[in-house]
Each structure stands twice: as structure tokens, then as C-alpha cells.
Length: 348
Image 1 (cartoon, rainbow, N blue to C red):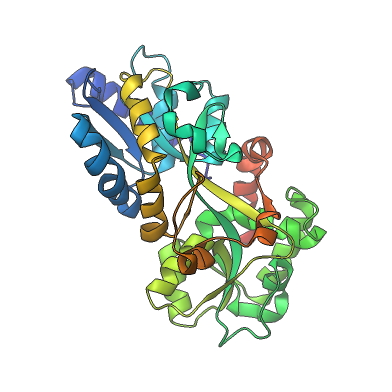
Image 2: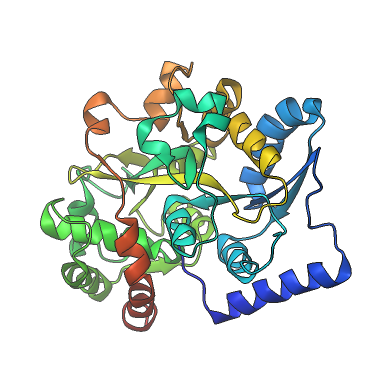
């Protein structure tokens, strides 16, 4: 959900100019090639394993992954806006960043008639400018050995009584603002930034810790340096699988959703192949595989997910009623101010 700054824009513009000037293999060729912008690590590996190798390669479609963080990739999309042909066909972004890129005027409006598998796509995952691929919800994570009684929601997480056992993940600052606002308003408002700041300053004064990455926080949980925070439920499952002592609680204030989706650039060289890639991600087999491999919920109906796994990664029918999509327009408008306060006041 992070925004990008002027340095990201310059990097993106430089990369676009270099690709154009040197003839680097960034442009997808028609009839058999597609360039996919995605995060590296597990996501990229699982796209290859579950989508590209079993579905697209047998059709003769060559896939080239453009791996980078979302900020430089978004910067490059904006920098290439003036070009008749961009260097990437399809991009993986969070729902918030999909909204931002649509506002920037760089996205194709999706023709769902070109996606046969979209007939099974959940209505909430069908955006005019992109589609949801996988999703999870923001839950409270805690170590029962350290935190007792079990928390019930965000208000319990953000209780100063836990002192230095409260953990924050720096890159999740938007989610933290949302959770703090919900904690302060009993779940009635995700966007009350002033009340959120009051809650956060109270736990800062109590000694709450900030970790730069998900991985750094996971290590702190493993070492029992911290005992309570909030994170996507899928991440809790991954950490449980890695032997980190933690449990998940769906917050009583409501469950903010995280959607990882894909969009097609307006100036994509190979839009047909971009649609083919997008449709392949919505097929039953890869959707089920991502649930097993990554701990995220699929975005299409009719999946056959083991009940024990669904209990760990999914939500009960009652909890599903409390899932809350984010206010992407509000986040896009206020992201810079949120980040500035987070860096200068909360972390300062």
C-alpha cells in the first residue's frame, strides 16, 4: 500500500528510457510472449509453479517476469504513460495500488468477456480496472504464552498495558492507522486519523516496538521479544508453519481485507496474452494451489479446499459478514500525510 516518491519516479523513468534506448528484452512480442510485473520471492515462484508452467507454457506463451517492489513498478508505469507501447503487459498490485494506478490513467478497463473463468469470480473481487487474485484479512496475532487473556480485537492489541510486547511492522503503516481508527471508534470508522494518532501515541509512550519488515517482526515473535500485533491472516499461517508460536484472532471491530490483484497496462504490447495470463490465474487448480502454498483465500467460487486448511486461512460465515473493503480513495488522498506523521512523529 506504500506510495512512491520522486526518487521512485526518476528510477522508473530511467529504466523506461534505458529499455527504449538499448532494445532490452522488455517489450513483449505479439503471439506468444507476456511480461508480468510482480513481487519477487514466494509470489513470483508460485506464479511460475501454479500458473505459468502448467497452463501458459503448454499454450506456447512465453512468460517473462519483471520482478520488483510495487513502488518502483508503479513509478515505471507512470513514467511510461506517454509511450505508445509500455514494457510490461500485466502488473500485480494490492487493491489500493490498483486504485491509485487507475486514478493515474495508466490502466486498461477490463473486458470481462475475455475472461471465461471470471464467471466464477466473487463480485467483490471484480474491479472495473483489475481483478482480485487472492485475499486475506487483517487479524490480531499474539503469543498465548505472553499475552493473556486472549485479545478480542484491535482495541485489545493497542492497549498500553502490554508495553514493549506490542509490535508494529513499519511497512504496514496504513493497516496500522486503519486498525487504530477502528479500535478508537469501536469499528465504526476506518478513517479517523486523529483518533488513530491518539491511540498510537499512547502505545508509543508505553514502549511499543517498530520492526522494519515482516521478516524482522517474525524473528522478534520467535524470540518472544514481542507478543502481540496485527497482520494478514495468511501471514499468521505461514509463520505457524515455520514454528513461530502465534495464534490469530478475528477482531470484533471488523476485519479489513487485503486483496492482491492484477491489472493490464493501458499501453501493454500484448493485451491478448495479458488476458490469457489473468484468466489462467482464475482457474480452479491454481486458485486451490495458492491456498495451500501461500495461505491466502481464492477469489473464485467452487474451490475444493481442505476443511482443516480453510479453518486456518479462511473465515467463518459470521466472520465473512464483518469483512471490510478499504476506502481506497481515502488512502490514496491521505497516504503521504500518514507516512509523514508515521516517520516523523511516531517513529521519531
